[in-house]
Length: 111
Image 1 (cartoon, rainbow, N blue to C red):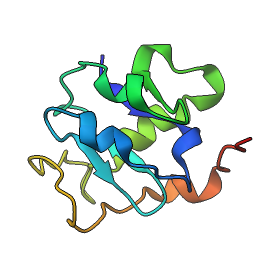
Image 2 (cartoon, rainbow, N blue to C red):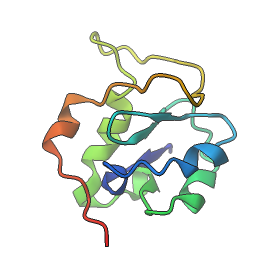
Image 3 (cartoon, helix red, strand yellow):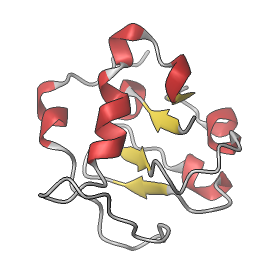
Image 4 (cartoon, one colour):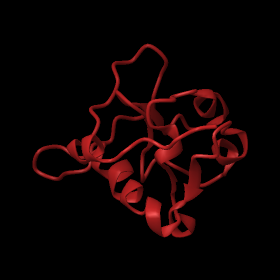
């Protein structure tokens, strides 16, 4: 079960998770980061380092956050619904496009 990034990352984008990922499967988007669903090796390093506790295994995402499972996947789909395989994120690479559904979801409120 892959890891996904949830609402706590929206408009925060700390990015420390990208430094711990051994396979570079965490990609920067416009408003948040996304974990590629097939590149992730499920090591959990990103989950342990996330300062806003935004990363969960997909089967452990709370009910109110379930939309983010689909959002993480949608960030890597083309217009025809085919999964894109970008081959790993690198700093300085253009951000992936945020899925349109993100626009209707409110960011988490951080203390």
